[in-house]
Length: 326
Image (cartoon, rainbow, N blue to C red; front, side):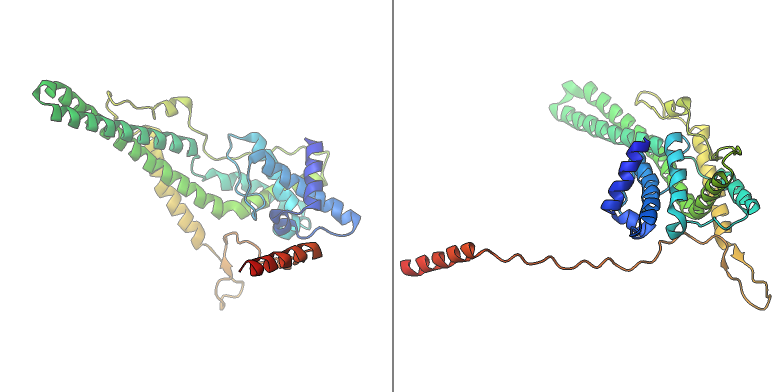
């Protein structure tokens, strides 16, 4: 993997992609600066390759979920590689400040909504399948009705089956609504805490750099665990059984939405007070992460390629032949 990272960094230095230019700036001309730039680009590029993150401008993107430890380890190296250009610069902070910032990581991750993207895809696909099966059963029921009384029992059965599939689709859509809201809350949480989590990761990396022989426990997320296999099995419904009520863990997600919305609103309303009581607040205590302002990359127009004299001569001869024919 180290050899692969070196190749990624060398390629980025030779052909800087948009994300590297935005995150690390231009490649320094001096050898020492180029080597440092290449190492930082290698750490970020390794994370992008491992995770499949391919945003052209944003270098590292959101933090991966707790269920992917390898990706999370690579992600934690990426914010540290950003350095002062597009990431937090903690090199001048004392150890006590770094330890405090590092300890904020479990606090920030503790109120994260559960990651239910896999469950959301599962119920969406199941709802679509139930819809198609219901449409098919309804069409077969109408065809049986048109054939007459001798297919009456068959038509009644198809109507009942269509109603079962419609109820099944409603049950899946109900779960889909809950999961979609939870993932929307998680996106809001990621945006609200990204700066603090990256700062904690940078503080952890700086402490390890300063004290290489000292043991530091790895940063561990305190976000809710992923759904268990038993909980996922509850999402598999059939048309011949009642859909029943939502499981307790799904109901907890619904209740957690209200708690999360309240905490997010409280966080966004917190302001930094001024030391002088005659002046207003200094600004929000937890500002949203904004992309650094950069001038657009100006590219010169492509040079015109003049045709060779032979091509011009052939074109002129062709025009002369057409005139003679007229």
